[in-house]
Image (cartoon, rainbow, N blue to C red; front, side, top):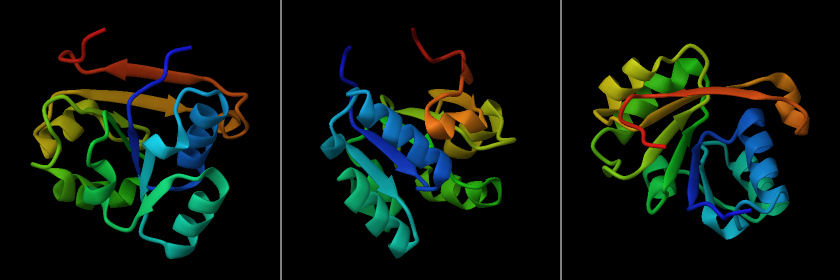
Length: 142
């Protein structure tokens, strides 16, 4: 199976952890290529010690050099995160959102960025037994 580029997660909650555990556990990515922007110090320490990933308190540090940026924050925090990231995502970075209720068009508009993938994992994904439904913006290539 092919390795993927560096991945940055913005938000290190339960669903982000499920995805991190899956991509690392299935050998899709080296833990050294995963970063997380997470405000809670205890959560950063846990993710670092459990998975050996880079955990940052600042989202902009977490996304530096990432090929894929996963938006994995609670819906009520999305507006602030999008405002913070706007203008800091390069044209080749893919933004993948697992944020409930956040449309592709809203994320594109608020980030001023065209490459958005909308993903809705289900609860069994937390134990790597679920399924994921996804769709992309028109500008995302195969």
